[in-house]
Length: 322
Image (cartoon, rainbow, N blue to C red):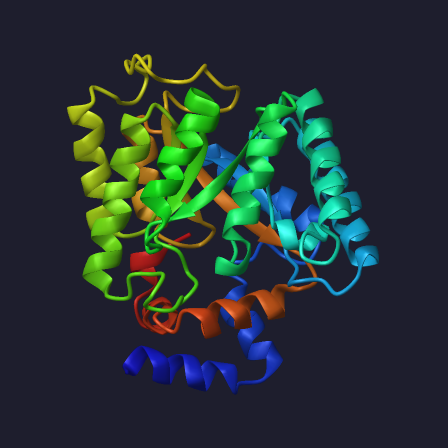
């Protein structure tokens, strides 16, 4: 209730206040801002994935903007020699407006990224596009474009089946980001209690690792990270080791030995640095763009538990240094 109250108050505050809150979690409004943040954090041993902010589009002209902007991002990564890949939202490329053209836009970007040996992550949005997003990955792999993967959400009932089905389709080339999931989905398709969501996320991480997939563990939840470290130890996986899994996929440029830890910009900086110091590969999610306000409001509305994180950032900033 306290968290929801904090979110409710934040949503009613002036735009400048929301900007003040979000500046910790959003690199800025321009690509130059994102590059500047990455150059600062690379000294800490982090690598990155870049997200151009934007809500669901209403026309294919907007889709062209995102394609063009991501090409700029890709060129900036190459120019500045940044250790980064791309994170895109399929709906921003037109998947819900014109499926054929949306798919063509995504394929165009993935092909250009492949020329630079760069990976593209399809962010997972709400349940309306879960099946379509996974299918895009499978279709691109069938075309020989293996530099693409998606996100699976621990809270969804379907996730274990998705891991099984993707493993059957593309085997060791599967590459996931496993997270709890921020979207508050209906009870008939998702787990809704904190304990269930955590335990099912842990199960998804273990299952994906046991299937030989490359796994990005995207969590700021200490029990989830601790569980992952324990699982890695049981599988004889770890930093600076060759991936020992017999069913593992090929080594990937810019990737860890079968896994990595991923965290949002501005969240759990001390934990990320501790993992990096221990030798684990850590990746920071870098969002930027003119749609910072819409992004911030959406995250607050979709997951009111963020309210406690806001309060903690205000009251105890030393516990959550970027």
